[in-house]
Length: 272
Image 1 (spheres, helix red, strand yellow):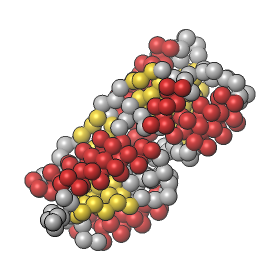
Image 2 (cartoon, rainbow, N blue to C red; image 1 turned 60 degrees about the horizontal axis):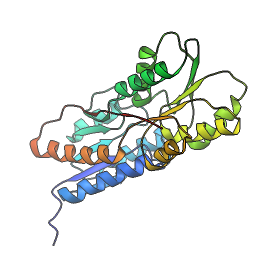
Image 3 (cartoon, rainbow, N blue to C red; image 1 turned 90 degrees about the horizontal axis):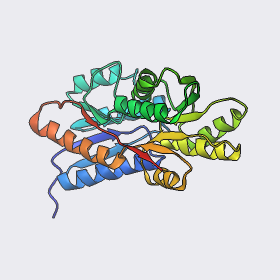
Image 4 (tube, rainbow, N blue to C red; image 1 turned 180 degrees about the vertical axis):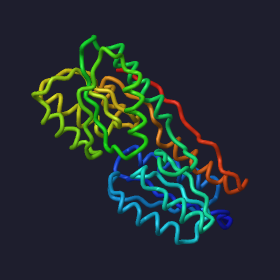
């Protein structure tokens, strides 16, 4: 017979509509089962639905919970979470995406390193005078901001970033954007996540353009696209491992009473 859960951890993700988030949920559930805690997992309908996520966060802070773990849809709109959690004496950690207007310990990828790896790949594989289009989902999420800023800083100065396109974080958005940009001149596309990248690859194929596509995340559909040659390179991000370690860190925080330092996972560049 299972013991009564030692702790209750509330998790509010940005979405659950891609393999990456599903993998993260699986990692969290596995850790929660092993550590015998009660895991309450909530998520909005999409990664850009900040107001919907705020309502979920408010709910999570009102119920009987020992710790809140969340991935902000808007990294510039989290101060109120800090104030509310402090009033309720609930420790808070962030996962996948850090906050920018308040401090919470962060568990997730080293997004600066991801941007540098992308810059190195593009600098090595493009000729001087060529150009890159950057596709991202939100200019208010630290994960995308950090990746793009690091890319800009490290990219060979002879290569130009012609545009940074922010769009819905869906395959259709990536596909539609590439179709709309069919007449524009660019030589590669960097996608801040592989959901967009899969759509970009399809859109480029339909317009007959054979140019490099590099994206972030290594869930199964993205790895298959890399193997098939639809994408040229992926920067690894393991949702399962991030989720698993986030729950382990949450429990360690509760057991010790001390907030952890940031935990950042390094990424690898995979090429086809």
